[in-house]
Image (cartoon, rainbow over all chains, first blue to last red):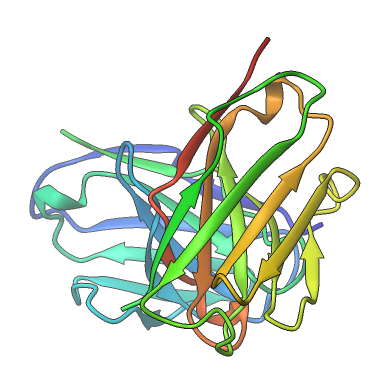
Length: 107
Length: 121
């Protein structure tokens, strides 16, 4: 099975900050990676798929990048509604595992 | 736009069978999308359970495969999850979801609101 790790597991930031979250896969997943945002009591929301592609309706301050088996989610200017937990998910081979999550909290 | 709604018992006894249904509205379950189940235990990250295509083709998480069956009912525009021999560790919020297009490459773009299932006597 492919394992995903995320760093950091927790980060404290202020409105307007640039935030970067990293997801590392245990083997090549050929950019079959999605990023989700989850708020308490809600279902995850798709932000980015195929490592780079912004889901329709998602603000352009969210972006994704990749280098080998390392993937990055960047929020260019953190907004109040962005405080949430972020998960990556690999969709290259079964089972489609999620990362352990990164909680973004208010500084 | 497509919407998903989970339904089923919120309480299941240990060793019993968990049964959930996901109703699809605003679109056809026979479209070129795969349909999937995901669960999330309290305080944990999501866990992929399995998926089904309208042809009936399924794929399951090997860690759950021996206990899980996902089926589809095209006449009712819904799909279902059955999990047997449940234990307390199966207590979670269960979500149904859809992949964004013809494959998982597009991520899960539509989710149900989730339903909480507690395994307890």
